[in-house]
Structures are given as C-alpha cells and as structure tokens.
Amino acid sequence: KAKKAKGDLAGALADYTKAIELGRNLSPPQSAEAYENRGCVYYDQHSFTNALNDFYKVLEFNPSDDDVRFRIWLARARLGGKETATRDLQKYLRRRQNGKTDDWPAKIGGFLTGDLFEGDFFKLAKNMDEKVANDQMFQAYFYAGTKRVIGGDKKTAITYFKKCLATDKLDSTEFWSASAELKYLKTEK
Image 1: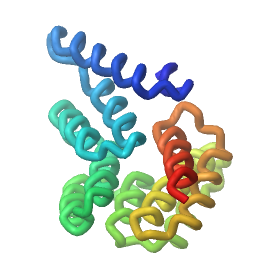
Image 2 (image 1 turned 180 degrees about the horizontal axis):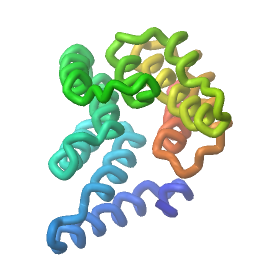
Image 3 (image 1 turned 30 degrees about the horizontal axis):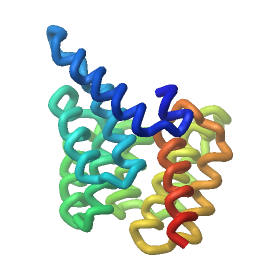
C-alpha cells in the first residue's frame, strides 16, 4: 500500500503479486486482500479486464464482499457491459438484503443499479454522526463521479472526485481511485 500511496503503481502491482504468491502457500490460502488491492491498482490504471479477473478471485474467497461486487459493476460498466452488470448486481443485492434501514452498502448498490437517484443517494449519505457522514460522503462522491464518467459527464465527475479527495480518506481505495481518475481525466482533455 505504501508504494501505491507514493504513486508507484508498478511497484504496488509487484508487491501485491508477490503477496498473492505467498498467500497461495498458506493453508487455507490467504490471498483475497492482495487480489482486491491488486485489482484496484489495475482499475486505477484503466486495465479493467485485469481488475475484473482479480475481483472475481476475491469472490472465490468471500462471495459476500460488497465492495468487490461494486468494483465489478464499475469495471464491467467501463468495459461496455453496464446492463448485464446491473442485472447481476441487482440479483446479488436481492440475496444479501439484511433488512437494516441504515444499510449503506445496499444504498451504494441501489445507486449503481439505478434504483436510487443521485440526489437521494447524497441525502442518504449524510448522517447525524459526523464521522459516519464523512465515511459515506467520500464513497458517494467516488461512486457518483464514476457513474458520471461512464455516462460521459466528465465535468461533474471531476467535481465529485475533487470532493472525494477533500475528505482526506487516505486509507480508502475509493480515495486513490478518485485521485487516479482525476489524473486520467486531466490528461484526456
């Protein structure tokens, strides 16, 4: 993670690949986190097919990993498979429903699948508890920004990614992905 934080994505990929190799030799294998982290690096490099391969490996370890399910939706949508990705995510969300009204992952999933409008998503991200609200808002900005990129609205996406970075959630994959997206969008102009 340190190399990724310094912008050394090639070094981060090498480290995560080594961690995956070492994790395979443990009983039981312990590579899920390394696959997820490497998948996020691939995602940040816009290597969406490689990212998908790693995210699907994570599901072999933990089929109930909401964050990976969301990343799969994002990568598939970026590769042009938004409709199929949406159906698959909706199916997963129906199976995982836990009945809690404050189920933030369900709200993210609902937003990605189009079952929750952007304005409502932002309203739901706000919370009476300031820490919870901050945690939810940076994710809301990342996912909303990414959906805007997918929809072709790069200007609003940039605004959302900047708001995500303003939360200073340096320990989150969404923060680093928002940073990577901003760099990518700036070089694309």
